[in-house]
Structures are given as structure tokens and as C-alpha cells.
Image (cartoon, rainbow, N blue to C red; front, side, top):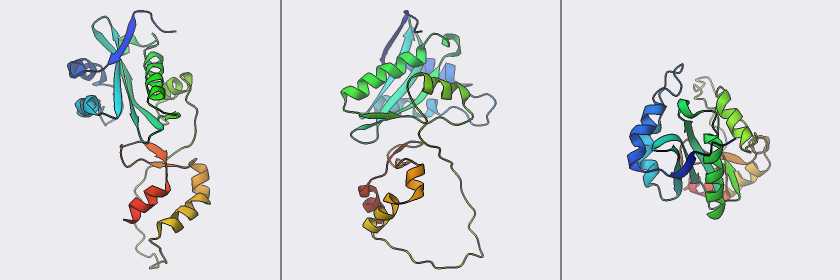
Length: 199
């Protein structure tokens, strides 16, 4: 249930201190800090995105950004809710607001990513209508010094596209791959992406 005292508006540079204050210890048990302080002003300035805040009187209660990865694929990221305002529907209010904005801008799909250890984030995403689609894992394998090669390779983007269309990986990933235009985001992999990679 959403608290009637909350409103949503576009974030401004003046919201920076409030956001930094309640995201300082987002994950106290993890070694990495919250990245929002580092990207906040860039998010506000980004033209293909909308960063929204939920406000309780004059205090920022939560933040969320929606950006476009293609002309129809919206990506929601960076949801944070001030611990003092949790349980009041802040997250749902922000998601609904940005779903409406994305739809008005031409989006036909909206996605987000939640790490498997973030139980609260997983619950929030499901509660606002997101459904699990696929699972990604990031790794940096060590090269095998005993590997044999060189292997046959092609730089033909159309051949790579054809392989992708018929691959088990494409099916498992539901056609999604890392979005080069946004860190930690995924979108549909296109034939043009293969051509860009070949260039």
C-alpha cells in the first residue's frame, strides 16, 4: 500500500545530499559501496533517461532511474529507499511512475536486474510486476596456456548472427546480451550489434 503523503517528481541536483545520506550504507555487509553518489549528477543530466525521487514533505524518500537501451526497451535501475521510509510503498510508487513515463516515450518492455543475494530487491521487483526472465553470471576466466589453436574464426557478422539465432545460449538468455550503452544492463542483441562488433 502506498502512503498518501508521498509524491514523485524528477530528481534535481539539489537532491544529491539526501540521496547520498541514505545510500551511504546500502549494503553494509559488502565491501563495495553504493555507486549512486558517483553517478547521481550524470543521471540527472542524461537526456534519454528520467531519474525520479519520491518525496515525503521536503525529504527524499527514494530514488529510481529509467533509461532507454533501444527505442522500445526501457531499463530501470538504482532503486534505493531511505530506511526510515521503508514499508510505505515508496518503491512501488517510483516503479509505477517510471512505467508510465517509459510507456509514454514508446517503451513496449521494461527490464531490470537484481543480484541473487539481494532478497529485498528481488521481492520488490516481483511485487511491481517484473518476472524472472534469465540469469547472467559475470566471470573473468584465466586463459588455458595448454589450449590448442588457432581455431577457425570468422569476422562475418551475418554468420555470427545466424549462429546466435540457432544457439542454446540465445534461448537461455532469451535473446538478451550486455548493453554497450549502459553498464550493468541487458537488452536484445541485434544483427546491427554483430556488425558494429565486426567493424
